[in-house]
Image (cartoon, rainbow, N blue to C red; front, side, top):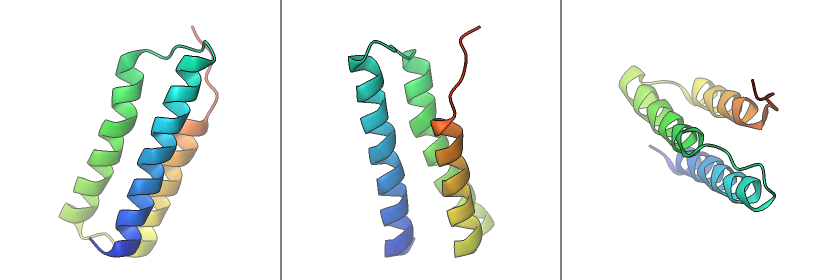
Length: 77
């Protein structure tokens, strides 16, 4: 993995960590499985990109898609 990809994954992981902390501190209180799932999906993206030998364009699209997925506001059932 090159430096740009490492930086992109680090930024996504840091953003996920910060939003998780903010969610807990503001009373949203997300389930621990959701927080773990956020980091697990980042790991899956990295592994899949490595196995599929994804181009940089596809890799960054995946990072962006994960960001949108995590940023999406969901209603509680």
